[in-house]
Length: 225
Image (cartoon, rainbow, N blue to C red; front, side, top):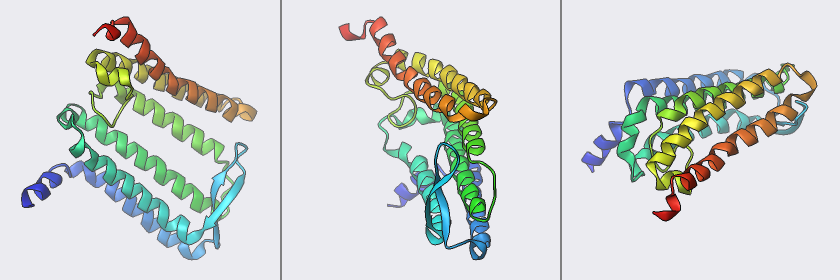
């Protein structure tokens, strides 16, 4: 039992203080704002940036930091049950930043929701689109470094079958993510069509590596093996 605990503790390194601290600080901000919040807090917006759903302030203040913590812990410990867990050491820095970026994104939306409840007039379109675009660009820069595993990256039957397909697909995915992130940012210049550009670009750009992995697999004669 003690050996297992030590094994778990080994993956909690000094750099893990950053996402944990961000979650705690953000929750403290939420608690500080709690008395000022109305009974209902915006939780969803439509494509025009208008609020179309609300939740209780208890739910809004406490649920999302807890969700962020749960996702952080899941991503931190899930490599331990991956049959290819040894491969995580080869991209440990990139993996750390992937989960940290996801946590930052979640916490940013959490704070936006709280400040929107307090009367902030910032259009969420000009928050969510830049946030996702920048996240995609950063994830794209990490993609080529991700080694074969069962939980992170472009996991298709063809990438998991072949190391060559995995590596080529992730190099392509890196370029694809950077491209769709950049195009989405440029789409902000077309004020009335931001989401009409953003949504199809993200969908197509995300599907492209999946399709690419199939054709790479076919090209190297994977079906003959």
